[in-house]
Image 1: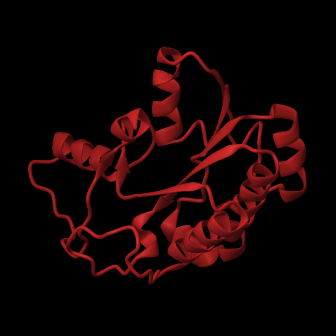
Image 2: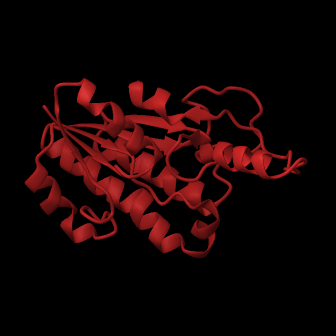
Length: 192
């Protein structure tokens, strides 16, 4: 079995890569340098070349603040590329696991929710991710969509690493308390 992991240099992709040798599969990890999902015309060509049996789509435009100023680029990566990947998977009998976000829900959630909870994204990042989820479901109804929140790991930038760094540098730190989340350890998600 050949497994393609897009976003292989990100937090989750790096954690999957770290444990991949424990599993006897043919793994292909891609990043923007060798599979640019913003180049929509080449997605099918690259997928035809790799010809995976399973795709774990970890790639995304994840800068929430920058998505407000660059909706078009966020939409290409979080929606349009996902639509093409899901469509390719459907036509090529390839399984698809798509990693999404809790940003598709309302910001005021304070309790755990079910996967069928109503969506209500409050920013462009959440909107583009929801559009990708919908496209994924339509183009490949057998897709698995995992909506994670507050992903953290030893790789990349994340809230937990920032807090640890601040605690090491300062005796007292101040943080906002208007956001509630459920941090997800990327290594745990990779194991799943």
